[in-house]
Length: 292
Image (cartoon, rainbow, N blue to C red):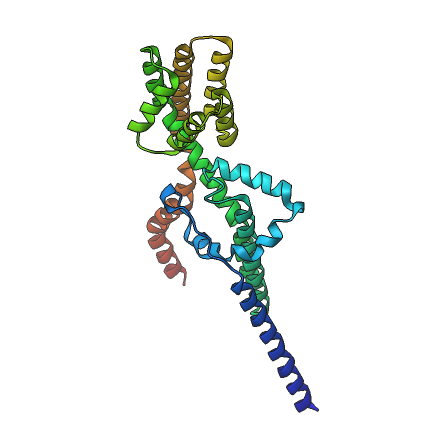
């Protein structure tokens, strides 16, 4: 009887393992390696690069209309991070999240079988939140880069416009002479849209809606208002330049003042225990020896 039960258990285990590997190979056979534009300067983390070819597995699922709101929100975040639809669209990003969810579930199951539930649960949670954390970090770094570069670009635009040149001609010359950065990429895209026949106010509003950086949005709104009211654009650019520079200096002073408070945490956690061990360690050893 025991032999029969052992044989049945081994048989069903083999069938389950075979079915699992067959389904896995079937899914991998549908995976497509999606080409990315490497000349755009966008860099993906290593883990995302490894898992990107598996996005094709969930592509058909993501195309359903039930995920339209999710895809719209993801598209806005990707545009804020500097990705165009040709480089990395919302469907690819949501498919990538599904790949991470599947990997997290696999790790959780393996941890349950190996009796390592705690560590596997932690790894699964980290993998589940990794795509969102990476995208939010990319948006934050891009917005910081735009905030740092904006006052200098406004200064150059102000000088060029006040000397009698047109705003678009001034912008073209500045973009040709500046090193390409996040702000340069967005302004270049806006400049190309205007060259293709889009109205300047519409292109500027699209820029503000796409990037959603507070300083850039305020500058764009000031330029649009100056054009609609007939106010001198040079004066508005100078006001925005002074405002953004003062805001940047205020932020730098704030971060400098916070540094003294933030450094207390690593001092208390890492430095003070080592100091106490060095100073009080020999005394504690001698005390223990004396009483023993």
